Image: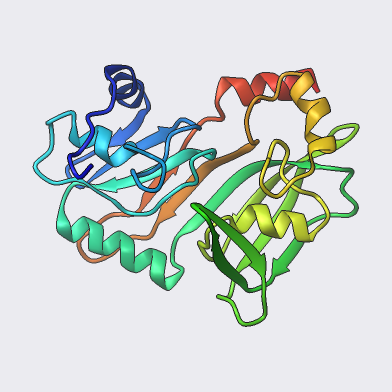
Length: 235
């Protein structure tokens, strides 16, 4: 049970093709949905285990995480100083992070902010997050970018990085993320699934890391995957 599991070659190759940026300090992926950032409860391996299985780097560590079913920018450090620089920026709120999320329902008005503390609990082997005034401060800004008959594409900037933050804040607005089986409603998701949406529509498309005395500013963009772009065209 304690032996590390080597991910299948299919996964190793998929992640090689997902690399969107690399320099001496960082490796950046456009992470596919359906693979965790790291192995853990119920997951034999994740992105970090797969990249280590490439046997290419002496040092590589995750700078942050994305949910298993969220795709997009995932930053990894190839040196200890680079890791500490990124972790410090995430902790201090100096990172700019933006996502694309397709939300259920017709959006009213323009940008809307959600400033609501979140608390994480564990139910069996699953995490569940809910709004609680005694939780950790969390803020998200939802900006509509395209409106469809029964859904709205929003760009979401998050000013904190809590587990399931966008999904819970979207639910609080009355517009859960399309395809979200945990926080959404089956009756809302079923028509979208029948039209071809086979995953949660949440994609991290932009990340900015500020410059420091040792490192230049880093601007990272991850294109929306074809399955999401094609679904928007259907809508």
